[in-house]
Length: 161
Image (cartoon, rainbow, N blue to C red; front, top):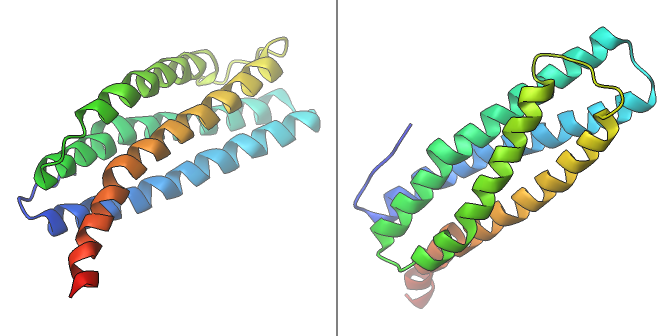
């Protein structure tokens, strides 16, 4: 749910809560991904593998959707409220984040309905893992460059007094 406040501290706190929830969702994606990778080594039944794939794909889509339509939008709102000039940071990171989204959606389209492609699954999962790692680094850089910078700005007056 979008939150817009002209008060920097209020906007920061709203984004802080959103980020906390979203990063928990990230951990769930990683846990589901890891469980799927481990399960493949156990050679699960096709139906079980299909179920695990659908669950991972659902979490992935929820995660990237929340990122694009909530988290990133709110981070940009926060940057506007703080009045900083973060356009270069955003312009440098968002295209790369969007590129990872496209690849994740292609993975979801291939595996999200539970289809089984044994000849490509391990390779596709490996590529997905590398892509997720890259995306998380980009997201963390965006968070550090915007939200964590704003945290320091909010803490600076309290520390000076």
